[in-house]
Image 1 (cartoon, one colour):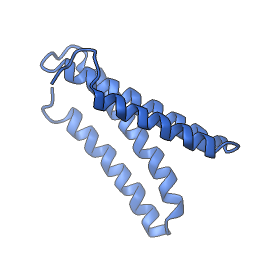
Image 2 (cartoon, one colour):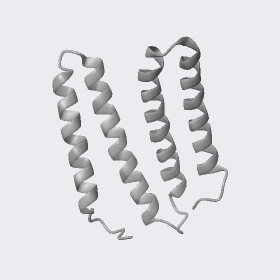
Image 3 (tube, one colour):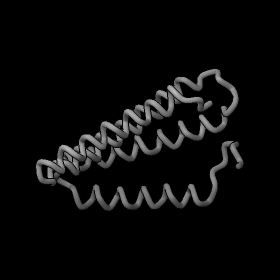
Amino acid sequence: MDLDRRYSGLTKVGFGVLACNSALVVYKSRGDAGSVAFVLVADAALVLLFVCLREFERRRGRPAGSGRIKAAVWALTTLLTAMFASRVAPVMPTPVDALVWGMALATAAGGLWALFFTVID
């Protein structure tokens, strides 16, 4: 895997699709500040997550600073999980609402365990 600063064509296409999709959603959601903010924050978190994961891969085998990168990855994934659960749960019946939040909590806890309590460098 090429871990220098160049991005693959597939990565560029993926970010292009994300940008186009986000622009369409923002256009359709004009007047709904909450939806626009959701899209912009989710996009920013996804881009930051991509950057953090790329840096984590680049530093593989060198522990200096990897704890901060792991913390950033966990925080961003937990943020995204909570954001999407907050959008899905209210439209579900009450028992399913609780299940959605329980799954979000289990995902965050599992990510915490996998990143900090297992051997992943």
